[in-house]
Amino acid sequence: MRAALRKFIEHNSEMYAYGFNLVIKEYARFPAHLPMPCHMEHGWTALTPPLTTDLRTCKELMLVFSKRRKGVWQKESRIPVEIMGAPFIHYRRMHHLAVSPSASGTVAFAAHSGSEGNVDYDLEQHCKVLKELPAEFQPVRVCLIHPDIQKGRDRVYRRHGFEIVSPGWTNGYGFVRNSYDILSRSKYATSNVIGSYTFHAVEMGLPFFLLGEEPVGTLWVDDPNILRNEKVTHYHYGRVATELFSTGPTQTISKEQREFVLEETGVNDCLSREQLNRVLWDAFKQNHYGRRVPVYLFLNALRRLRYGSRFQ
Image (cartoon, rainbow, N blue to C red; front, side, top):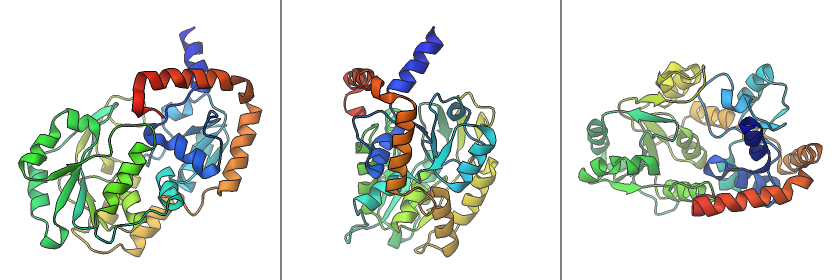
């Protein structure tokens, strides 16, 4: 009974991380008030196989970032799959966002925790290497997401004099808007680990470089392909990305870096807005979503009451 209820809710409501559902609906010109008739990857991953949680989807269409991710999905699942590209990059391009003429310094994306795990690294040492960046890369703003601020990690960085910025913690448009506002204020970007921000920064034109100790992640997800105590470099594509961006402080983006970013984000291989619109409508009709719309609107209204501004 509980499994059936979970399946019913998954079919008739949505709460995608970082507002991906809203961005993809806007990109595809698909009505915002209708349920997404598909499942989507929620970010860049160094893993080769699909996530087990994605393979368990009840939806009958899968959207992935890139050709690489489409290929591995087709080997593991019979659910049709299409390349949507990185949603944030679609958002940036649709809204013509660019680096501000008054941009200065570096945004440092600290390795972050989340609802499914924690990361460990020496915060004091990270502060030290950031403070030692040459004058051209100063000032440094440290970007932390909400769970790490709740854990008090911002206090360490503040004690060393760093400005703290954060995209917030929302599943609406707020996260992507805030993320690009943070990027647009900076000339360079860095982190102690490869993450989605690496690809967003480089695609926008910000040179990105790795700096500091690689963190160890402690994850609690039910996926045999994910190590419980992992580093990004435990995975092939994590090692490839890490090698590419282990340049030290740099003011340029190499041809190899840009090509890797464009491949991994799928922006040259994804469906056009018109193509994705047709694919979503076909999936919507095939799954008889029309009769579920009232239920979907009701469930999402309940979610908005519970999560407030976090859910739009």
